[in-house]
Structures are given as structure tokens and as C-alpha cells.
Length: 112
Length: 115
Image (tube, rainbow over all chains, first blue to last red; front, side, top):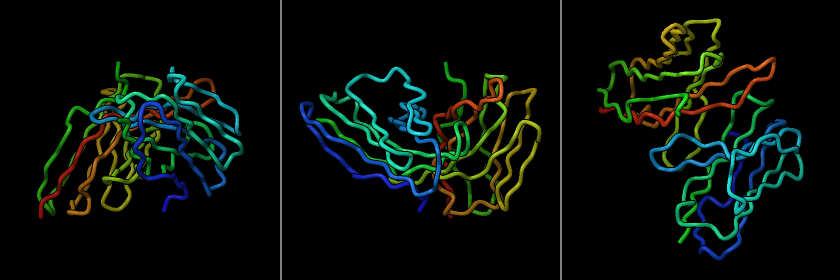
């Protein structure tokens, strides 16, 4: 148990669906992140929030839309995804920006 | 261009022997380095870190060595155990004018420890 909980663990969706990934951290951290892990690629940083404000958006397509309503919760809203978006989506948190990350278990997403 | 490189996608080691995982980086501004371990269907978990002011950090069976001039770090696991079988990610971040940048990860090395 890392203190970062992600739901759902697995998700299969069609290209026209809308779904959301949820992340909750119980560590009292101030920064939260979304990462994407595709096969044989490094972990790719997607979004960074610090104190509920987005501080980085690494050229992620608009079909991915993050939301951070408070410092403990982070969402990733998905719509009209493509099959190449199939990957493991990992949420992480840290006490401050650039500090040691604590990861959730991830959501394994398959887009059909 | 990858700033953090793990050139060996996989490594196989006999139980009880030493495992050495390597990582190279290109950004001379990196000053904080970490190793993460990942089991299938789980998120990465922090293993050990090192600051650029040190060249070695040890925690039990795990030791990280940093060679700044070569821009190289390595993780030594001794003795290796079957439960160490996992994917190991190297990560680094830089301090830009007092602000620590985001962690940059390598592609990972899959370690298999055979009984």
C-alpha cells in the first residue's frame, strides 16, 4: 500500500466512449501527476498539478483532460480515444515538485 | 532524445549472486537520481536514491553508485533473491535555479533472478 489509490484497475473502452480515471492520495502531498507507460517506452509525464494548479502539460492531446478538484484527488477524463492510447496510466504524488514520487497501481486501459 | 538511458532491456542473474543494473544520463544539470522497482500489474515503488553530492548510497542489499564525470549510475543488489525479479527504472531530476524539475525516467531493465 503506497497511499495512492487508483480506480479502476482495468478499463476497456470503445473509441466513442467517455470515461474517467480516478486517483486519490492519502499522504498529504502537494503535487500530483499523471504518467503513461507504453510497452518498451520510458514513463511519459502527462500532467503535473501543484496545490491543485496545473503546472505542466507535456503536449498531451486534448482527448485527455485532467481535473484536480483538491490536493488529494486527481482525475483523467478520456474521450474519443484511439487504439494507440492503450497503455498503463499511472498516478503519482510527491510532497513537493521534483521530489520522490509515490505511485498508484495504475489503470490498464485498452481502447478498441 | 532520451535524457536517461537504460541500455539493457533485460538481465538474468543466479540467486545469491550480484545484480548490476546500469543507467546513463545526458543532462549535466541532473543532481538527484532514484531507482524504482516495478512488479507486473503494480505501480513503481521507490527503492533508493542518491544526490549528486555523494558517489555512493547503501541501503541493505541495495547500493547505488554515481559517477558524475561519466554521467553514469548503477544499482547493485547483493545477494540477489528471486523476489527481486522485477523491472527496475532509473530516474533523474535537475535543479533549475532552486526549483527541482520533474523526474525523467529510463525505459527500464527487467531483472530475472533464477533460483
